[in-house]
Length: 117
Picture 1 (cartoon, rainbow, N blue to C red):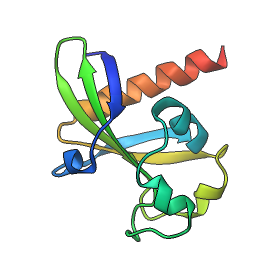
Picture 2: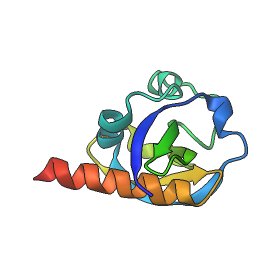
Picture 3: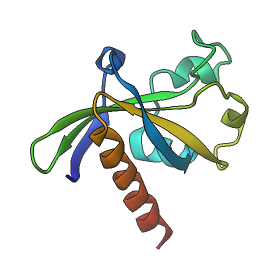
Picture 4: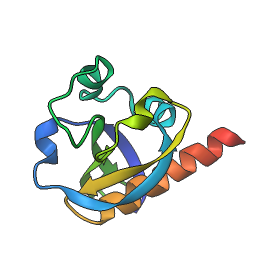
């Protein structure tokens, strides 16, 4: 299953998702790949509604076989990294199904490897 389209989704789309795995990337990498997550507006200003997550991307994905998935990428109980966009961080990945992690992990890995060439 390969990702052919990804875009930011609504926070409500993440309801019922759960942790599926990790992905290593910098905050700058994720901002470049997916844009500014809606939760970042509060976090960058220094106030957040959650003491567990300060940045979260909710992503709607379409795969080459027509499968539609929701993935979440978020920090978990760690706000110390947010001031260094170039520091690699172990992001949590969630989804309704485990395939969400498989697909987003492969996508990020390919994009970051391509960017280094």
